[in-house]
Image (tube, rainbow, N blue to C red):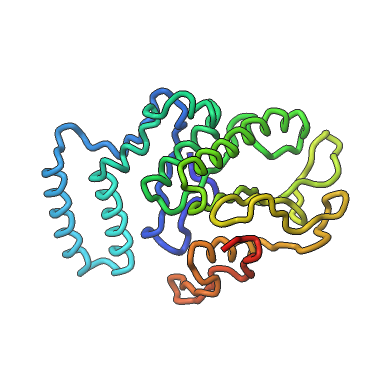
Amino acid sequence: RPPIAGQNAGFLGLTYEPFRIAADPGAADFRVSSLNSPAELPTDRLQRRHKLLQSFDRDGRRVEPVRQVTGIDSLYQRAFGLLGSARTRAAFRMDTEPDSLRDLYGRHRFGQTLLLSRRLVEVGVPLITVNWAKQNRDQWDTHLNHHPKLRELLPPFDQGVSGLIEDLNSRGLLETTLVVCLGEFGRTPHINKDAGRDHWPDCYTVALAGGGVQGGAVWGASDKLGSYPLSNPVRPADLAATIYWRFGLDPQMEIHDPLGRPYRIAEGTPLRSLFSG
């Protein structure tokens, strides 16, 4: 299945392509097969193949664009790094987690994906995105029968997110991990003719946890119907700037597309007062 929009690197190029996991971490046979080298390919042979590939790449630079070759080289380096790291491969062994912890997150795909995310945090993965995608009726696009669908969707969402925060906190990882929970827009304040709620970009909620966020803090308010911001509105650009700032990046930093055109990584202002330090 093709990736959801926004799940690739765009004009940043192959160097920044994400490592996608489409399988269900809650499945009994869950494995990331791309991380398993064949039994007949021991470590020393894998390393010899890597050196041979590097020699081909050096010659390839004479005939291929440097940018393209560099991007592919970076992917190869990452791939060999993953194959050669027992610690990284072990992070995907969900069957090593105790049943009690798997139950804490919930025995559903969303909860087990969040548990896998915590395991990846432990081995140093710096950025992890969990998408609750459309899978049969299991989706948030509630144009029809809004309230019955939420009775199905909210319990696993609440269980998974609360389990993640509790688990990160118990391991001393919450203060150094920023959890950002959001959708791309809200829902209309009024119910439509199909007992559903349609797309509404003017007012919605984002939840942050960890990463120095002040626990229990609330920023801004809407009108009584949830139609429009009433105080302290936050734009998507402000949220992006806040995330980059907590990552230690200057939101005013510029990147360039393949034509050399500059882009600010965020046009907003970080919400510094939400954080304790």
